[in-house]
Image 1 (cartoon, rainbow, N blue to C red):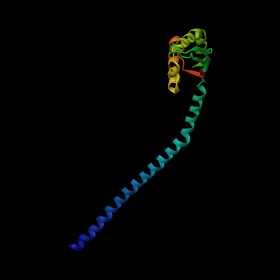
Image 2 (spheres, one colour):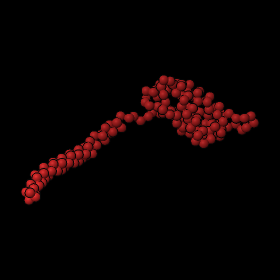
Image 3 (cartoon, one colour):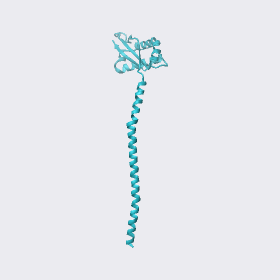
Image 4 (cartoon, rainbow, N blue to C red):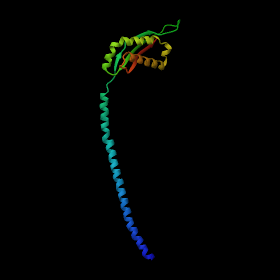
Length: 167
């Protein structure tokens, strides 16, 4: 009985091996297909898709307009000080950065008001208020706030100093 069972096990083993090898072959073929398809898709994305993005970026850069600048007349004021102290003066050349020409034209008629606001603020400062970059930053922020109030609802991007001299 043992002799007859052994050949049957061999026959079953041969039949069982054929389906397993077909499954392995199908799995390997599917994996190879996914690998080739994924590699091709990745190559297309990196080689061809990227060029359109550079073109879109170039078009966007062309649409961005450079800012316009509006000159404020030179301002010279005496700084606040304690009685008996030497009088100190502040001389400033200021430029307003605006978004476009239309806004620049809107600001020019209000320039006397802007100059007045700047002078009244600057006359209240002391020389130690302007010490260091922190003092300059505070002065710049306050001048920006004041000019934006004067020309509301329009807005100035920044107040820029061309020259600041404390003497």
